[in-house]
Length: 175
Image 1 (cartoon, rainbow, N blue to C red):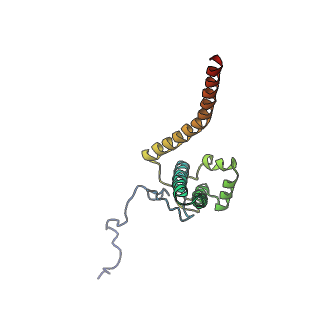
Image 2: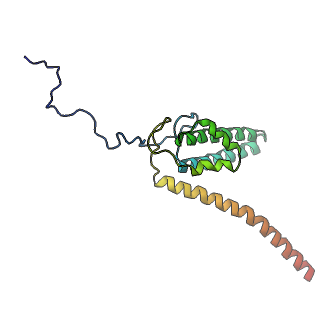
């Protein structure tokens, strides 16, 4: 008699077959701002940093205008917290500890988080982040576009005001 519990060498395999097995990449991305665990890529880091900052500052500004100016201090605390959590995740992406996020306090040096690529495959902080979809590319284009328009407006509006003042002064002298 044969043992029924013994493995049958002719039985089909029971393991699931998936194309992503062993690649070390996540298939989806979810952001958890209340945890420093995990990784975030460059494009998502830039998009979430700018988007969350804009959202926090707009909401904080509205609350400060309606209720109390001291609420804007609370908005800045929330902004620093969100930025540090995102920066810790970004430093995890290139296999560095979260202490590197203190570079965020140095104004120009914090740009390194945008230029250092993440490690390919899994590292000690998790799997590689899921690839960016079309929505991510569109979001980064919109966020960067809005930032550039804001910078250009900050330069152009005062210059235009000076031009209008000079034109009015010249018009008054001609009369």
